[in-house]
Image: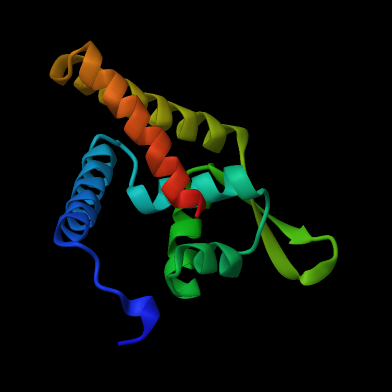
Length: 146
């Protein structure tokens, strides 16, 4: 067995598995609270964070086929959340850019999710547990940085 394949202690392996399941459940629960399709919000989020980019770039960020992203982009353009414009450096390319309507929609969705989650935390956890959760969030950030 190569040294990089050292088996994890059972408790760590169990914790890792449980964390993956719970993180997935939380993400699905948050998406279910949205009035807007999740795949469209994800694309808007990328455009908001990354700036203007091509459909191919968005597809690569999401690890999906460009054809699938093209459908999502078409829906966002039709909704007025995204604009298309020629790439000034390569006229053959079309850049996608989030519109002000798209930004407002994205912020409404983010705010609604934060509000719902904050309410759930306040109802389900006492002050000490909330502090533990806050510390856990910081630890999860460190995991994602590594």
